[in-house]
Image: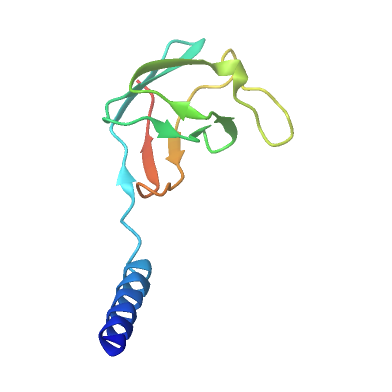
Length: 119
């Protein structure tokens, strides 16, 4: 009986170790529509989950970090986007050429990305 228990525990330990060594899931292509009107950036999250700890970047320079982007449409004021030196995005002098949305990985899913232009 002691040997069976010991064998069972060894097998259980091996299964636990092997499942912990599983490959990380592939990155997620976020499903979004992005547009802007000169004052706001509009992001429509078309996925069936919120994007946790999202980092949104305009023109590779101006960033906005948020705890989440909910399902559906979200609007962000463009002047809230800043460079690392604190400079704010000025929609009167700068056109949005590129948008990147990054969602870091969680226990439930891989990291996610969206790249494109705002319509």
